[in-house]
Image 1 (tube, helix red, strand yellow):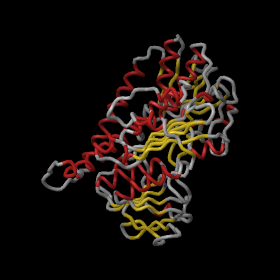
Image 2 (image 1 turned 120 degrees about the vertical axis):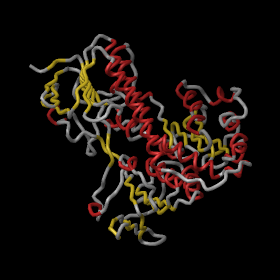
Image 3 (image 1 turned 180 degrees about the vertical axis):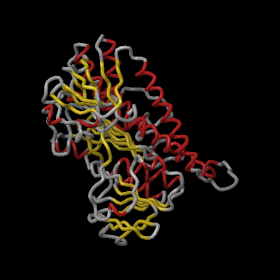
Length: 459
């Protein structure tokens, strides 16, 4: 007879352990299955290690700028990559250890190590164990996409995971992909001391951002010495001695970039191809994304999908919010829905971009009539005082309703400053309400009411 549980959770990423805790507190027995490391992408190869690296990169950058602030540093600023990597591993390991201890303390939760696979609509096999439950939650995350590009099998390339193991600084890092992951690694390794080139197939970096934001981001990177090659339609690879030649076929510039290392950052895909979802009858789209409704339930009653694998958000905070929605609806008598979620995210270059709600392009596509408030960081006192005047702030407000539709803050602490707008949007507050706020001076956030007082037409 299979081992029966009140609930089975496949994957111990950001949604899995807190859901196991809540279900256990409600008196349910839970099987938590993880085939690799607890904590998923965020703790092991994503947010925790990479933002630790970003902190080291910023320290090197600020140290090199010390003279701008009247501070003298004798000698060159050098980066010991092995020591930098050791620090990020220590932070990541500590975070994972805390999570492991928490799971071990859950009285009604049994942790199974191994690969989970459906052998029936409500039966999952893990090694020699056969587990059964009417309530199954899939939190299996995603992995890097390695596209079948010419020559890819002939060269050694890095991914967001393997680059965390580098001990020696690349002489020239070629980053293939101009999205969040690629740009964050590009800037940090440039600040560590590598020459860096970003190669993007599309005509622009971060194509989903509005032109003013993406152009400002590209300017920030190029000002630090990062080369950007756009429109690279025919990317291919060739070993060139100890180096790697990346053919780019761009409209402008040389037809290839020769680097010592190549980082592939061309997107991610869900870890759903080896779960036996067809046996359970769970529907997926052409990319392998598990299709869910606004309560996170799949087409099979009792089976839910949370986190990156459901295609409804690819961030740690969206995965955790998936858990909150499921827990509220199943355990608290709530009626929470993905449809109520205000999308928000950040890009952790320096200065960071904090984003919430709609872009101008999104609002136009939706047929919304709106006005936009803008302020360059050169006109923000706090940014001037810190000597960090790159970037801008913008807020989009709907005409008539006065509702805030979206915002972007690219500048010092933009990832934190945007939270005031996130909170107002979640509360359903109008721009008029925000205008009456008395913010603290000197901050970046203090300019938001001023921006809302000076709305202009969309551009």
